[in-house]
Length: 490
Image 1 (cartoon, rainbow, N blue to C red):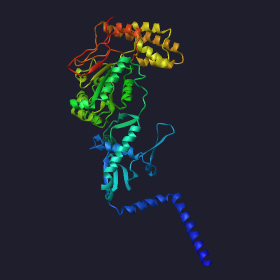
Image 2 (image 1 turned 90 degrees about the vertical axis):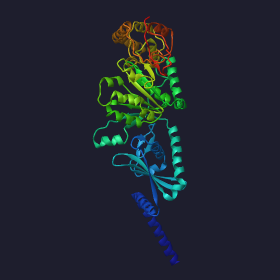
Image 3 (image 1 turned 90 degrees about the horizontal axis):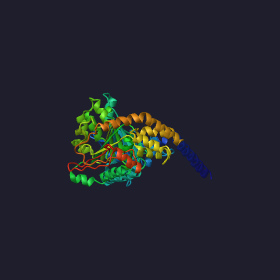
């Protein structure tokens, strides 16, 4: 009995000690140190091989494998067990997303083998992922594992339909500027613009033609390849400020399900830097350069006109612009060298004019929920006398007075009589003097219709008698078309 009592006592004491040790390990975090030491000792008995996945190929173009690995690793549950992890808010207010941090180590298992990924960054700021795998497992799992990453990342990207807006970052001569240049020049945010072709104020037949052109582009990969041409399409949007050019770009991106790259030319160092920006864009994207005419008229010494031309149709563009839409916006193209706007560089020209009565009715319906009103005949008469404002100006007046449609319409009438009459008379005098908008000789067809309009009605027919008819010109010299309004005398 004495021996049994002593044995029981020692077993109880050992159990209590182990329990206390376990509490100390877990409560103080020593368990993680023990696991780390165990992995270090375990590594002494194996030979490992390392594979580096840099973010950019030769620091120029984005390495698609890097993006896939990034997507894959951020989906792993093991990221929660890392020493340091970034937390971000997701699409929903109560959604929390975990993201890798630099120099973070993430473990993974595949076909019974354990591998590690290191999210590295060198002294120059170049990012990369480093795969650590046992040489004994390399032949057995490496190919299948990389294919598994491709498959999972593709599924995740298809499930995540969030579009992004990319903006270029400026560079300077210091070390941080050089790091940004080497580490990628684009920074992105979520693109959640609500404008679509369903809610944009645009004439129905014109909207259908633009959508048809974009749909043809989406389906045209094999066709473009057979012709030996780059699978890209370029648009010129021109017209006064506030006529909806930026909203139209957003509607295009949402329709195509493409990311948007907004290039700020003031942050571009030189022509070669502009080329570098193009190389670092992804496919399935809309590349936008806004207010191009203002930049050219400013005669900037940073980016030359020839640099912009090479950006649109050089050999580099042929290599890096596949599956992309390029959009240039201007207030007017009269002062632009026609060589910049020729087909091949700019395929589609779309004119954004000031509002007419049809556009006004669309805006009233969208902003005020009013389809008919006793003040509409007065507004129509003012428009027929040549007065006009931009959709943005009319829209702001309606937003400010949205609780009272009658008051909103009165403010619009007052603005049309003051500012709109001056603009309308100036525009009408230009028409009467025979001044016409400049067009490229290679443009093959024109669809004359105000982009800020919508629908058709007897008022539209009367307006067209005064200001223009839909006219289509055909030519065998090119494949481009111009969407614009060309005014006529009544």
